[in-house]
Length: 592
Image 1 (cartoon, helix red, strand yellow):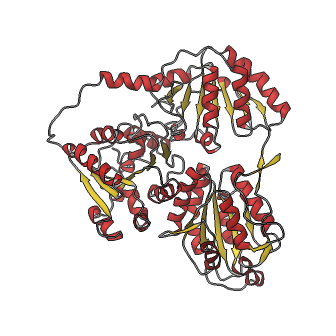
Image 2: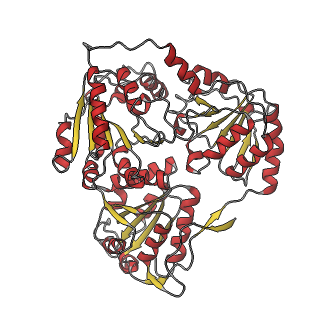
Image 3: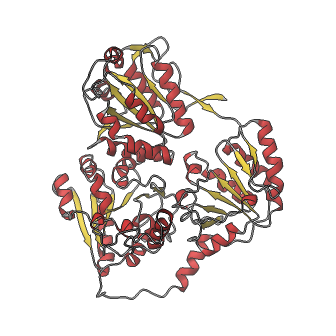
């Protein structure tokens, strides 16, 4: 391992001292953090006062700690790191679900908790926001499974521990935790003398050489091969290297649905999305029949494989993870050849050099297949429709709104499935939680993405059940005069759950809200525009009005009303897959 300096400069000079709180904010600012999300509490007020005095950094107060964690997650996906500030006990535990999602989805969030005075913790004093037993390690233990590094800061350890924890956050791309007691916050420590050194991993030369000696001949001799990518490739910033390898080696790229947004979907090397039995038939035929499938940081889970229906022959599968490789062998399919001490970026570069100039394999890119489908699709009927709006009409219309460089924040369920057959424009960021799937995540997440990339258009697609979970954060968006384009899919309940079990069951119903009144209730009158779509003929004019208003600087909230049991193509199959994985067919449960 060797260290390299980050590109930001450090504003302090040798020999100076700063408080522990200032040291932390200086380091975070150096790493690109400009906004800190959270909720104030008596134990973090001191460090928040220090934050307000830090030039170039802003406080973003959220309605609750869970929403703040979601917002930090969205921010980090676009800026590379984010900061979350909560108070001890009641605050930090409220944020754990958001941290767990960031851990699962591999998003680097620095969780900072203002804690009671260290002197009282050492005396085991019975302080408020504790269990009244003098125990101060329980919240740390609760957060430990969802963070990759933790520290309780003291004057003696603060510079070293802050730097260690931040380096780990950057290296692992996962949440970390810092506990800052109120009496430590203002104690003096040496100021940073140089930018934070990041630990840049380097592959073990012998391991890399051994891997290439085994893998390169296999790929050269393959009649058909494919690179299969997932979201961690994006988290480690390796998308461009994957495309370069595909172009050099003449190989196609397929993506798991959880890796959407990583590859330009119009690129001639993009084969399409692979997801087991519900894949596009041509994609499944190519991937399942390939002589060599190179998985790049893939994580096969129930939802991105449609209940583990992938048919990847173990002897033909090469599993390249961030630091390891496992190559299936025909002579022993269940005993792969293992290699460790690797860095995936270096592996990709080495493969590109070794495989350069190979003839392009004979595959049809997804963009050409979609173009052919559009050309042969019957023209949509023109004129008024007698029936209500359907998902089949909605998602093709919404797809026409998408523009290059948009940030699409997409809730799990109907919105995520609704865009399955859409080709995203170049440069679009796809922000979703395909693994953790915590409903309500996306509304606070769009707060984070809006602050992380204010120059880009932000578009949110969220279901009504999800909206109920975190609706308060709409007030923060309005308060900060942010202007995302929000589409609320009103199915009168949890439609994705109805398609698994209980299509008419009361537990899948939700309270009825007056959605057109929500924005005015949470913000200043006239600050936003609320629109309604409930009939097919309203789609074109309302969508055009929404785009105009958003470009004129207003937050636009579009309620889209649909029947409770109507769903995008594919959602019913997904529901059936989830049911078959979780329940017996003879269970007698009510089914869709």
